[in-house]
View 1 (cartoon, one colour):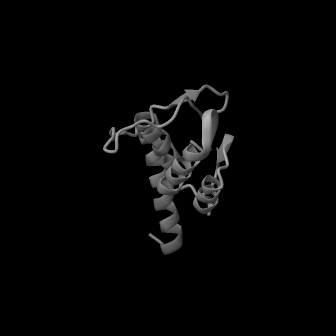
View 2 (cartoon, rainbow, N blue to C red):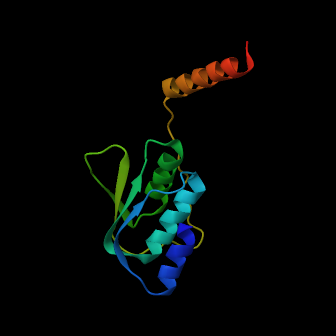
Length: 126
């Protein structure tokens, strides 16, 4: 698992300028990957999160945007990734938390729901 590798790298004193996150696509796994990566990324370094079209990864990006002030988003010509530059070290207080919100595309959700219902009807009949 990447958390094991990143933790080992941190203990060994490894520092990075560039980290690409494209692993398990759950919210918690991607957030853990980001937090562990943050610990070895040098100031001025870049983390790229892949598959930002997925709701779980969008939520991670939203959380980072609202809670990690030591990162700034870098514009890229691809809407499937998020590029974040580390501008300094994390100096948040131990109790820091800012709510983060997700916006949902209702037509996309309806389309997925209808596809799911259609699949169930095919599998189990009307």
